[in-house]
Image 1 (cartoon, rainbow over the protein chains, first blue to last red):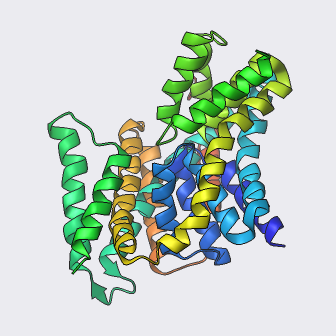
Image 2 (image 1 turned 180 degrees about the horizontal axis):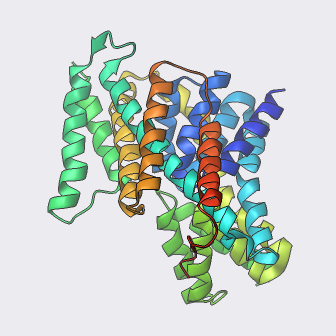
Length: 186
Length: 191
């Protein structure tokens, strides 16, 4: 049963993740949390690991969730399922339906789906930050987390805008790991 | 070198050495498949990037499938896609075995507490970049904001509502608006 759930869960992710990796994160959270496969915390750690290891983030996450639930076979099934929809769609588009994607009705639907996706990603980002600062349900407040978040935000957004020098996501993760070790050590 | 083997090696190299996914991979694919191997033209690459943006799934997979298909048909598509996925699959498989043990070590657990904060920022940043690229028109902006508000409420009150359903609803609304406006205006045909 777990194999079927993994397959259909990640098939859904593969079908609806418009806009690449970050679009997949809210969808994967949805599925993983609703089945209770991983805690929100473990999933967040894994997003960071996926970001710092090579390859498409979506594939990395599928492999990890699959492994954690059902070993190597689970990993194979989840990865296969997440890749399958885009594989089939690209084959169809290149081989037969090159016009279909430009069809005005298809485009009309996509014009609704894409901004909605962006809104979902925005909400997910805000929610994850809020949840890190206040331990849900908003009982305590983590001052260390606030300080680290502010430093990271200033480094990441500030430097990118002022110095025209960008910190890569991987660099940000490395810095955050160092800050975490320092900040939570005492 | 046999063409299929060549496809496999090229894409597994890209899969192994590209960090950060998505757009980082597109430039690697362009470099390997257009400049070096001349498997596809620059125009092909532009076209597939546009198609990749309007279809779901990892952009890198979309590109691999496309290049593979152009080279060697269905077998080529399978070979290139598997080549692309295999390295990260193996890497994550190894990490998954180790991560649980690592998290037992206090200093690493603390590092991950910091990392958790960075992930939220990265997701927020991805959203901001997409919003900047979005058309500045009332309809997409209204959809974006309403979706964000609904999604936040769903999270705060722990409502069981799938984001896929939300996307389908807004896709439907957008289609209905398009149909009721009549088909005189040519929207979306940018080319």
